[in-house]
Image 1 (tube, rainbow, N blue to C red):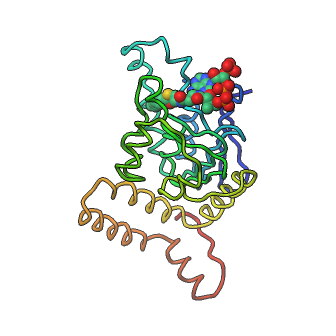
Image 2 (image 1 turned 90 degrees about the horizontal axis):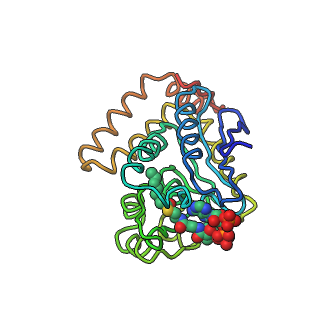
Length: 256
Ligand code: CO8
């Protein structure tokens, strides 16, 4: 069976499932390549409005595949170009929800952090254990983690290599919502369907603004926000959304 499965569980919603149960869903080159390919295709596909990435009950992903990396040198690491594949995943313009059960470690935690919303089961364990094997979190961990939880918590996670439970991750702002383990996928799909029913134009503008604004000055980011708001007023979805409110009916957003 394929190491990454693509499913379409509901209208406008795609589910990307990492499927290497015997390796705790470790991210080998094949998994990374497929993730990048699916996220690219779904990002361009007009019928897809929200994406969920998940694993299985034991692991979202236990990090990069250590067995595949152990013997390689610098040039091979560069030639593999995994950082390009990672950028492709992070560049997906559609909202992406990580649905985590079990371990989200190393590259697995970093994959979750490239997503926009993280739903975790109460027994999920997150962490950046790379320090224990003589490397560092190279998929965004040293940068996205402090932006999410602040310097002191990020330093402790990256330097100790210790795992944290979902509740603690939630309290520090690394997880959006904690639910019972059995409900992780259901809740993520429910949220994806909710978002998919909104105007995809507005949804994508919000994602772009939140991400771009994190790296800009407040003044520049607020100006971007104003422009994006003004642009949406030339969409049919804005007219439909406001008219539906006035008519006391459900809006039907077409992404136009
Ligand atoms: N790589 C390769 N194989 C793995 C990995 C992994 N990361 N994690 C687990 N496996 C394999 C085990 O080797 C084992 O295989 P086998 O049955 O053949 O012995 C199988 O999965 C089951 O694992 P365990 O028996 O260890 O299962 P447990 O439930 O006892 O423990 C753990 C699960 C805690 C997840 C444990 O397996 C573990 O600690 N794994 C390693 C976690 C880790 O160190 N992750 C960081 C990896 S480095 C990294 O992610 C760098 C990121 C750089 C990203 C760059 C992107 C551009």
